[in-house]
Length: 638
Image (cartoon, rainbow, N blue to C red; front, side, top):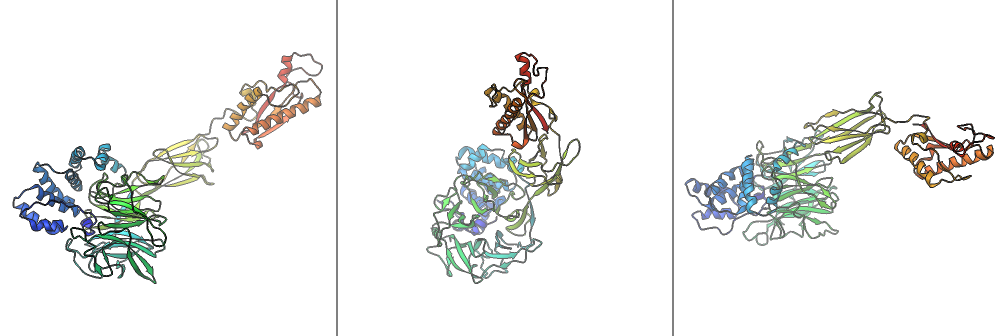
């Protein structure tokens, strides 16, 4: 992101206590962040053999703060070759610079040295995860990127969605309303530009966004409400045609930047005013809106900032009022730089940072919103992130978006890239393992690598299912069907958009019963005891009936016919009525304990189905009579 933080004046790194040297002119330019001019002088001095820690620090810093980390490597190396004591921050900067040329082994060596002498969140993160590069690589491959046609040889960055258009920032001079070269970048001041999105998703030739919004100073980083009637954007401290020299300058006479609001009235952007939480003592920039548009997120170096720049939020209240800005805290912010926040349609925060562990320069991180808090940020990996600066990530509900990078191979100093989330489609059908019969109304569950449910569907009449999944992520498919064994299958991750067929075969559960089986015999229930001439369920009878209930719960399609029998004592009519009451009493007990009524039938047979010779007039022992006083639980359907 060459020179963007210089261009926008958002990050204010500079060294105090400048020593008196022979390069006072370069020092003055350095203090004013005119790094390009300062570098020319410093390098002439250094190339003549002059060496000093202050010279090498400033040369390294000048390139570092201009986001030319591949050039800062040389001068930080010269600094450390002097074997003199330096502040811990230089170990970190040298590590970041080494990453920009992908010397990760050496970069981690200096990060380890930084860890030994520093005590901040950056060193703590490294101490907890020294294999962070492996984790980033493992998390890579979830996006597919492509170049777009609107880039120029200048700065192009900071896109935002605006209906069926995108608005972005550029320093191109050809369509600028005012041509004025910036002393620090040797390029035109930045304006906002707009391009329409064609039906084939290509972009039209950019046009200058607005003559009322764009001024003779820098504008950037716009965000729009969903109705397109309100915008927030970043600008130098400039309003009503005047540059705020006194009140708009910090103590080093550096123009600050602020967030402004504009309204669309009769097709023109007007009523431009700065937000009340801006200040003449610090900068605010890069606004973005929450999903419900009730909260504004932005980057700032205001008091309470943990590092060079932090991400804050502020409530948007009624009648153009705003709450008190709140720092998002140490989960998101570090002693480094956090900037370019964006809230995705699902509430996830994306932002750029050089304080969290990354591949080099600014990397893009995502922080999911859960339990009213933003969670630990995750590096979104390659190919979005690179060894260079990557920032300005935005994404829509269609899982496509844009980001900015100064990686090699671009058109200009910064370039905008388009991306889409790499997704695969997993699909198939569910069939019987033995008969190959299709199995509609099967439950198919998509699980992540931690076996957490992501989505669940029921197969259609053709027993088909389908899920859309992200590339390079591990998933499992679980299929559930009554009377069948549950099956789980892993999904092998792939790195390209494709469709993968995964048919699932289910084997029937081996049911140890068949229609006509008497569960009383299977469960060794010899008799369901009732008090003499009574039909109420005794406690010991309830215990035995409960065994039948548990079996029926295990096999939810099982239907049972309850049959009650008596011995031959008493009359036929009495025994028939008694057995019928006992059968129905058993049914009601089972219904009360969780068995659906439609799965049960109940009949009393009295003494009509004796199992021995103990009929009327035949003397039998009590034991023989008891054998006839039985209950049967006959399976009528499976």
